[in-house]
Image 1 (tube, rainbow, N blue to C red):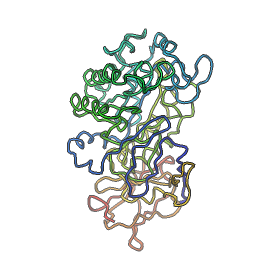
Image 2 (image 1 turned 120 degrees about the vertical axis):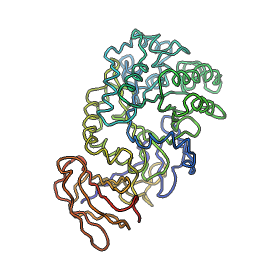
Image 3 (image 1 turned 135 degrees about the vertical axis):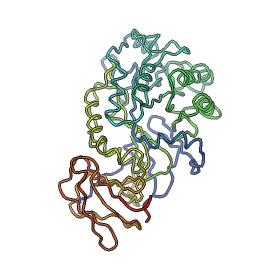
Length: 476
């Protein structure tokens, strides 16, 4: 096997914290667009109520993120000029005055939106939960809010509550649903954070008036009007100091006791949110999630068609699960309500792989080893002075009681030696596919189990070998 090494360059990622082997994620850390991630304490698993809330999340592993709003109309272009950066940030990046941005609502009429089709796509893709933007930083609510008329039901010709339709579709198809909510930034509100071109410096605003008058009441609406809410995905915690963040925690705990809180509220949540598209280099025992794009933007941009391949998505998913995390992969629907067909094709192709190999993912634990993940350089640093990581990309381990799953991304060209372990290996075989019932030959050399894997592998994108052993866990 010729090892594939990927250089993990900190300066190319948002909010990358290189985590040394054996050390916890060091948080909070600000990302390129102001994101902060809050780490849970080492004793987090001693909280039974928290662990009960997290049980489904730890098993799910893979979710669909949806960024959809008025920004899908300009789609990266304002008045004939291309706006650089993320599609959903066009109001900020251009910048666009509220009085010019507001009229987009009168153009928003996504007649092709079909909630059941969106949920079916998530299921076809092998995803176990959905998170959709209920209100992004532009301040526009994608649900029928009684708090503010600036919402999809009252301000658009569409006149429908897409969150209600999506919640009903999720209930019909047994899919968990959560809501992204921008609690801090609201560029439409005079006292919300972020809009300094219309409303002046944030420091001079009555920020608590905005929080108590809009953000907090809208979160209450989300928790009471759309059935069981799997999680609230808060974002960019600007000025969420003091007891402000805790007020949101209290609302969620009171009105949705089983609802999870992500890691970007501004205080400790139920799980850690990494930086955008950032995958930690090592195993972490806390519950954590990588939010990621399928191209280079979250909200739809008509000029961004650089989709990740199914193979890239599968590698990232397995890599994340092997380190103990979840993968929340985003799509940005177009203004007519259609998720770009090319991204649908990618997701469904990856989903077909999961139909055959999902046992290695859902409910699986992290690698019991770690050397296969790569290493942190002791000498090379990025432009910010942080160590570079070298990611080994040939294979990954995931685990379940009595089973070790090896997902191969590169075909072994020699016999494959398992790391030294005290457990007795009883058999090995392929997971899924036509060769699922065919055993893999085992032998022992110098106290280590050797797998004689025949070439070619059954799936050139990624093939999974199951190794069964005596005992519940690998003993080194």
